[in-house]
Amino acid sequence: MGIELCRIEDVEIEHPRKRVQHYFPLYAYEDQLSCLQYYVAGNKSNGAFLVPELKAVDYLLLFKGDAAGLAKYDLLHTLEGLPGVQAFFERAPATLRSKQNLLFT
Image 1 (spheres, rainbow, N blue to C red):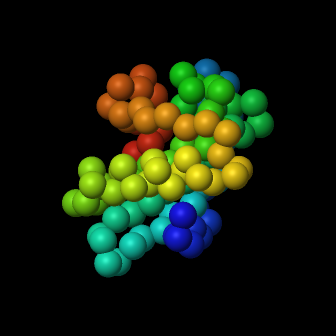
Image 2: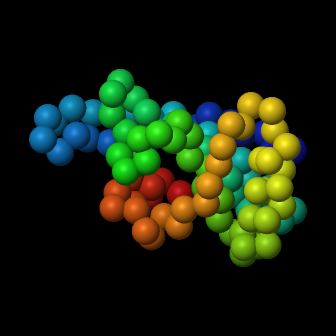
């Protein structure tokens, strides 16, 4: 995709009933030229999910910035051509019940 993701601090989520901490890997990249920030978060950690309503999803790709709307179409086209990507779909974070888990961005 032409970006160099770097691992940053894991996303830490506490299970509400069990009082157990779960850590989800998080990677980031900031494109200085386009002022876009990219984040890739693992959705699974020891049987827990960062976004439980998306249990079939292994990774979440989030991006933000002033040009995010324009970059979305280029990014989706690039993802189509990557050999390791089996499937992808777009989902607005605001539509997720567990959207608070994505506040790391």
